[in-house]
Image (tube, rainbow, N blue to C red; front, side, top):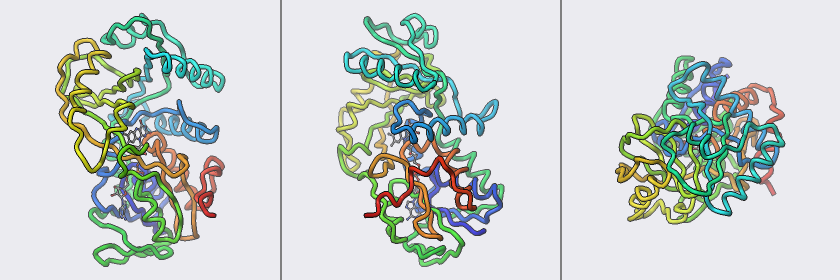
Length: 359
Ligand SMILES: Cc1cc2nc3c(=O)[nH]c(=O)nc-3n(C[C@H](O)[C@H](O)[C@H](O)COP(=O)(O)OP(=O)(O)OC[C@H]3O[C@@H](n4cnc5c(N)ncnc54)[C@H](O)[C@@H]3O)c2cc1C
């Protein structure tokens, strides 16, 4: 089988690896370069904690398992150190209690901790009175670019060709044409175009709405800050009421704050946001005063119109996959999508077919 994969983000390279594993002759076409889309600017927390409905929760739990299988005993991109959550506002405390009840009932590893137990896990966690703590030991974080490199290398080792700076502008059955006028023929085209999915699906006559990733204040837009290397101990994802933090390699930390996302505008800089991250960090980690923020980037999520994954054929030669939580789901979707392209439908994907958007 000859397959064209449009997009070399984490989803595209996972699908390319899955197809190549099954013996397909794969060509990956990307308008830019691998990882330059959303996959290069992501918090990359592997979890199923806030995923609803049930079928989406189950998909993400399976996604967590697929990461463990891919990483084996040790992998330089995968950190299965769990997630520590600390709630200091009434609203967050109530949400955390509800989450513990809900996840506990479904058997998802989750437990309440005392402040002392939380500091055993993270000794540099700053002291705060009246906080609630919980730990989710099955969760993880990844370094997305090394993950992408692992999957891309597997695809290449199995014979895949990767063309960068190759924008697809026409799709016709199993054929595509690029902006430069080159034609590629295959038996199947798989769109893994992330936040550009609406445009690519439309080329194949399919309607896949995505939440506008370019609109200031849209739920698809967020700030992610990266600090300079900082001499504090942090081994895992840490969610607090005002700041989310994870290690980002080389002593750097990645920071995210939900309440600041509303200020993010892909078309305009946001003065003052870096300073706000610098102010918040010592509230969470002792010894992290005045840590320089090296970069504040705008992340643009790939969120299908109803928030849930899209995966399926829209005609016999065209398969589309697009999802938020793509870091959690990539190794799993790579396998499931490749299986479907080779004729084995996955029951896990039944609830996520693109025809739900067809009037
Ligand atoms: C702020 C933020 C935080 C996040 N946090 C998490 C998290 O904690 N956990 C989690 O699991 N997920 C998280 N995500 C989501 C996750 O990062 C994304 O779901 C995932 O990276 C999407 O990968 P993708 O391969 O679908 O898209 P992308 O990485 O954007 O790749 C799509 C590729 O398609 C290419 N392309 C588009 N159109 C064309 C065309 N016409 N021709 C050729 N190529 C084309 C683009 O150049 C691009 O390289 C987060 C995202 C953001 C923004």
